[in-house]
Length: 336
Ligand SMILES: Cc1cc2nc3c(=O)[nH]c(=O)nc-3n(C[C@H](O)[C@H](O)[C@H](O)COP(=O)(O)OP(=O)(O)OC[C@H]3O[C@@H](n4cnc5c(N)ncnc54)[C@H](O)[C@@H]3O)c2cc1C
Image 1 (cartoon, rainbow, N blue to C red):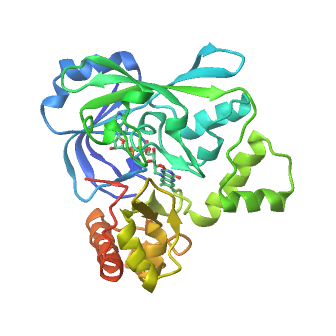
Image 2 (spheres, rainbow, N blue to C red):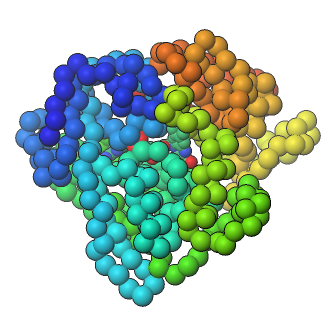
Image 3 (cartoon, helix red, strand yellow):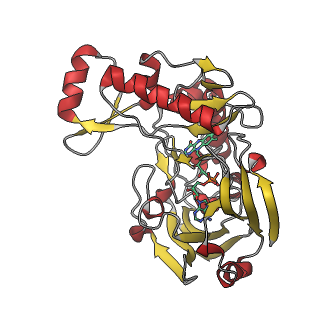
């Protein structure tokens, strides 16, 4: 376990916000977790972070930040069709995806290129290119706060939904996720439904393999998303709004170009990026904050923006969209 005092959080969040915290603890081994409870860390303010790629710090954090840095990718069971892999919370998501591609395990290739750690992937049920991580999560292991009691939550108990899970509702801030168990397929199968991916694979005229599909996805992603080693960002800043069909029917008259995604009866999901673009905010920059010119859903920090500046800016984007469409777009990013 490593402990730092009055620590800058700049290296701990991909937005590159220079907030500070009172104390930061890096857990390097799962056996250290009970120490957090013995030392009563959860009796005062605390925050759990992974790779900090879905966070916006709008101020300093006067408390303890806890980060998992535990490692381990282990095969725990196997049949002819499936394999079950248990992964420590501190593993980089990217390393796990590479492991699966190398071993010809199918299921996470469409999620290649998503930053962050494995321990965070169930929290917002990460998703991309028609796949969500819930499709491959079998169970999630962790410890309840404040008791320290270990738990195992099976897939069906995680309440997974679009960018949502129990870890974002009832268990938000009330548990430490220590490991995730995935069920992957050993039988060749792909999810190639996203138009941009279909076109990229067509252009390449290559064989459909795990390596080629994930490489094509990286190309498609890189066209639209900023390189976080150069420009600060937390990826898609807003969730796609889901509205009543009746509201959509009214909007359609004025904005026939609106993109929709199929939903349950009576509801329509719109593309937040398109709403931002139509509101005129795509590519707009104010100081060091802006809407990324290649993807309107992404808010970026071009250098030294403060969290407060990002907050004022994203609220302006919300206002513009609300004025034009009567829809409040909600951040997907966790704001502190
Ligand atoms: C360029 C870019 C592209 C992105 N693309 C996508 C995308 O395509 N799809 C997508 O879904 N997301 C995307 N994201 C968002 C982000 O990468 C994911 O949400 C990712 O899972 C966050 O992982 P993290 O480790 O950085 O989590 P953090 O941002 O550190 O934490 C996220 C949340 O999880 C909680 N948490 C983290 N670890 C634990 C733990 N061990 N126990 C309990 N709670 C925990 C935190 O408290 C916080 O609430 C993108 C982000 C960026 C910057």
